[in-house]
Image 1 (spheres, rainbow, N blue to C red):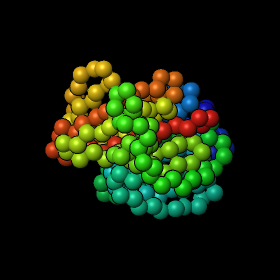
Image 2: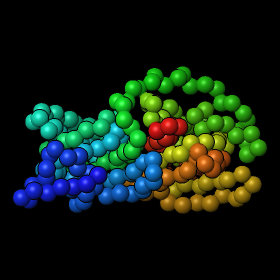
Image 3: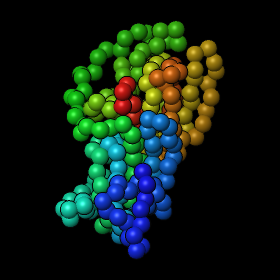
Image 4: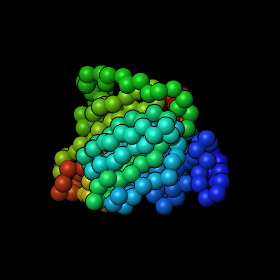
Length: 239
């Protein structure tokens, strides 16, 4: 997208990339030909420039109390708690943080999302298929700690919750995915045929795995003192 300036103002007739026109609030965490992961932060009462988005999946890291203003002047005020999620269709708008506190979100933009998102009711949780061992892993969506809570034609959201001391079954990821981490804790990871590795988990961090090209199997154990919580956003084929 190209940013055009005229007499110091953004030309509203063109689509304006939020990362370009609001580089102080929007920072790219990851990008490839299919998607872009953007961390969006607003100071108290900060207002963005008018900017455009492709269809995107959003995870709130803090409380949100914001006003969206569209090109025709229509406004919409929204309040959301921290750690909520939602799908947003392609839009051109201006955002204002109405709160006295900072606001921070992770936005996963699907570059090829042309049509409006159509939500599909997640299926009932099916019994785990396989033994959950390194030689017979379960599909990730059937692992008991992974819960499918949202799906449309572009993405599927797995809400992953592992209490302290608990361990998942060995499970297989077969889709590209973006993990948005929502707790500070420590985690052990084990790949088939390998030993455990441990690492700290930082709330608000994000990571991408190319599971479509390179499917992978692992299991995890929460070795911290608080619940491990991650929203794992799977990118569906054709997105």
